[in-house]
Length: 257
Image (cartoon, rainbow, N blue to C red; front, side, top):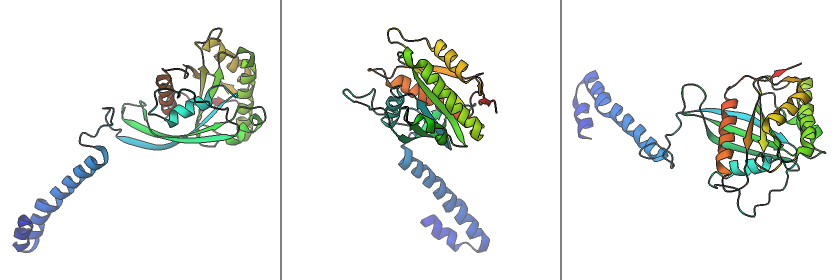
């Protein structure tokens, strides 16, 4: 206040310039620092000690498909409960019969040189029952970023059925000329179960079923075991990989239109 009063007594533009330099600019800098502290804390870090992301690039759409019981709902539950280290004991997740939507905000991505980048993922899971599968194609948005397809490696009897379901939704996408920039990610669940199919074999079955409509060059398959005490780590790893794909990592699908 004393400085402001002094500057106010100076004549003309001299007083105005002194007021701006001595009062306005320092106050603005102090306010920005205070605002950052109030919003993010003194050290500008998350509670886990990780630095805050420097840039959020907005929302990307993700469609989650797979047969009923393939693990889609378990993954979305873990995405919706980041404070839980695993699926809660006794938590009975019924297969989704309709549509389940969830937006997971500020998912960290490592795309590009800037590692502190985040993206909001709009996750849409559609049930995998026989009655709803013919409608999968209706949920493919024009600006879809990632199609995530779950397959249960421990259920070898339904592997061909899952592959044909993937092929059918791909044919619907081609017929409607949708999702020109989408990426595809295959997820093999329960690969550690006794008698489970290797993820490489699952990838090959999926490729053969859909090769008439989409080229599988660059399409990856990730293994995930979300059941048990260690479910959080693979769930987060999958979420991070989806974020990378949503921001352009890897080649987009080459549809055979």
